[in-house]
Length: 343
Image 1 (cartoon, rainbow, N blue to C red):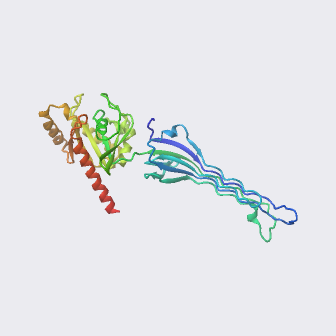
Image 2 (image 1 turned 135 degrees about the horizontal axis):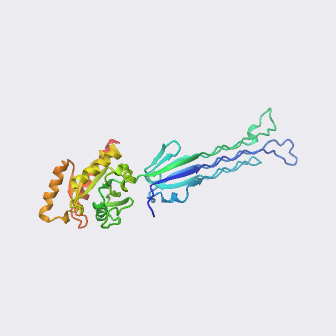
C-alpha cells in the first residue's frame, strides 16, 4: 500500500430528527389531546486511533463521511431513534486540523483514543412538549437542528523512539534491516527509500524500541529539494536522532561537509528539531582498509568537533550494531524512567 501521511476529508454529523404534531384519537376517549413525540439526536462523527493502521492511504478514495440522521418523532408519544455515531479509524499519531481555520482539534497518540470532530444535531420537540393549561391543543413542533459539518486535514506523524537521518545511500535502510525485522528496499542508487519505514528493535524480552527511517536528505531539503523534506516532520516525535554518515562516499564527497549540510537543513526546517539529541554513526567502515578505519573516524570526529556519542558500524556485516542497539536501549530506558518520576 502506498504511504500517505496527509489527507483532507469532509465530515457531516447527522441532523436531529423533527418533532411530531399528532393528537390522540381513540374510540370512547374524547379530548384525547396531543401525543406527538420528540425526534432523535443525530449521530456524531468520531475519529479513533488504531495501532493496526500505519498510513492514511484509505482516505485517497473515500473523502466524505456522513453520520446517521436522527429519526423523526411519531404519534402516541413515540420518540424517534437516535442516529448511529460514525467511527472513522486513523493511525496512531494522527493530528487533526480544521481546514478552514487551521485550528488543531486533537492529536491522537494512544491506541483507542477517540476524538469527536462533528457533533450530531439536537432532536426536535413534539407538540406534546407545548401542552399547557392554556394551550390544550398545541399544533406547533420544533425541527431538529442540523449536525456539524467540517472539512478536516489529517496529518500523520509516525511515533518512534529513534529517527534515522542522513544523505541518500548513507546506509539507513541497511541499518534498520540489520537491527530490526523491517525489510525496506536496499539498492546501490540514491533515493531507494521513497517513504518512511518503521522497525521494532527487540533487545531482549520486554525491552524494545521503535526506529523510523525517512528518505535521504540533500542540501536544500528545507526548501523542497529531494524527498526527505516531505517526511522530516516524522522525526519531530522521536526522542533521539541517529545521524548516519558514509565514511567512504563513492562520489568522493567529504563526510564532514555532508554532516554539516544535513544539520543546517534540520535547523532551517525546525529550530527545535535542530537542537534534538543527535548521535553520530560512522557507517560503512568495512569499505576502508582495516589499518585506516580508526584514523579516518577520528579525523571526522575532530573536524566536526562532535561532542555527543559516536559509533562506528558496518551495517551490512552487522559490525558495531549490537553495541549501538544496547546504548540506544539504555538511553531510552533512562528517559522513560525520568519521565515516570517527573509525573
